[in-house]
Length: 302
Image 1 (spheres, rainbow, N blue to C red):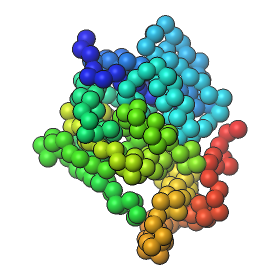
Image 2 (image 1 turned 90 degrees about the vertical axis):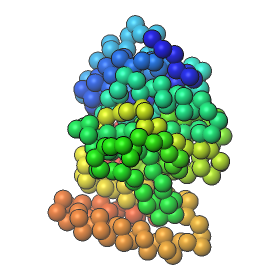
Image 3 (image 1 turned 90 degrees about the horizontal axis):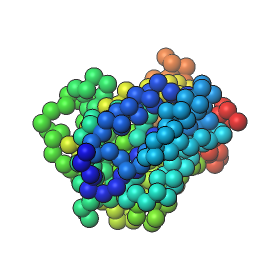
């Protein structure tokens, strides 16, 4: 088995998603080169996942299982895993959604890209479940308005075979050098879930770190979604967290423009939500951000 250019630790977060997490871990078992460390974090699951994952990870010195007693959200759960991975001395931590699988050779290109000084954060080519359609190839975000998503939904092809400098990556598969965490800290747990990786990338970019898209590394994303796509809970968090991002990072001179833009986006979401019963979630989410009601939402199991 080949060795990666730098030691990489992988953090996989599980919340009531045992089947997806098992598939993800099976694919990591077949990776060549293999991660130096895999940290599996259970985020307070109640579906039998903790016991099954503890058995799955037992006896493998390169895999650590960490059981949390409550749901800390994506940000909090991943942060606990990042801390454990860094404690084991890895140079790079790769945050990986549990509803993904990796191609066997995915790790080598990521490690090689981050062994060079120019980039400190990298993302692979992320394909949809059909393995023919782009889910993410990194992004060029206009941060004040949160406008982005390059290639989403387009057929995979030669145009996505070229490494590119970007300025934001998705938390679905995000590889970060240790010095980034040392300088800017971990994910902001105020977000709980959604937008926290964009906040992290904004802080990393402001601190002078570079980003790169690595097409030779391939990850497949099933996009299972813990909360359900376009569910009221998901829409509430996305609306709240976008508004919080604007409040946290928006330049004062652009606040009127940002406010109008956010209102237009939320109106669009609300109109779409009439069919799925989520317009109220858009309003409640935005108001929660304006009132500073961040962190775990009320519906999270204690």
